[in-house]
Image (cartoon, rainbow over all chains, first blue to last red; front, side, top):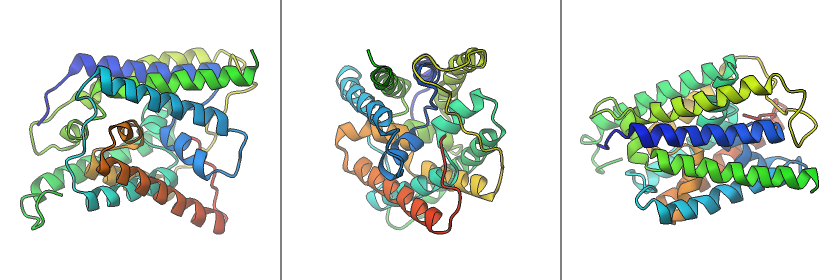
Length: 147
Length: 150
C-alpha cells in the first residue's frame, strides 16, 4: 500500500479549500467539480459556460505543470479498463442524481453545514469504503485477475 | 476590467489552485485514495488530512461570506437552495461511492489525471460524461428537477 503523507495531504487540502474560497467570495459560486464539468457539457443554460470553462482550463493547465514539477504525483488507477468504464458510468450517474461529489458535497457543502451534503457525504463514503474493501478481498478470487 | 472578465480570471486561478492541491495531496494517485477506502490492507489516512485541510480553510471563508451582501465580482451568491433529503440524493451518492471505491477516481482527480494521457483515465472520464448525460436525458424527459449545483 501507499505511505501516509500527513503534511503534503493537509497542505494540498488547504489549497483545495483556498480554491473553493476564492470562487465563493469572488464569484459567489460553489466549487463542485462534477457540477462544473457536467453543466458545461449538458446544461442548456449558456450564460454560466464562461466561468466553468475558465475553471477547467485553469485546472488542466495547472495539472500539466504539476505533472512536470511533482513527478509521480499523477499515477494510473490499478483497475483494468472494463472496471474503469463501469466505475466512470456509476460516478457520472451518481454525481448527477446526488447533486455533487467529493468537492461539492464533501468540501463546500460540509463547510456550509448543509444537511443534504452531510447525508450525501456519509452515503458515498460508506459505499466507497464498502466497495474498496470488498474488492480487496474479492480480487484474488476473481478469475480475470485484479479488478 | 469588466466584471465578467474578473470572474473568468478568478475561476481560472481557482481551477489552477484546485489541481495543484489535488496533485500535492496525493489524490491524483488512485492507489492512495483506495488506500484510504480499503480497510482490508494497511490503511492510509491521508485522504482524511486532505478533507481536514480543505474544511479548515473553507469553513473560515463561509463564515466570512455570511457577513457579505454579495460576492466581490458578482451580483449575488449562487448557492444550492435545495433542502430535501430524498432517495435520489442518498441513492445517487451511494452509486457515486461504488464507482469511487472501484476506480479510486472521483471527478476532480480524474480530470486532472487526463493530462497524463493514461488510457484508463480517459475511459473513466468519457464513461463519467456518458453517465451524466444519461441521467440528464432521463431527468428532462420525466420532468424531474434537473437543477443541480453542488
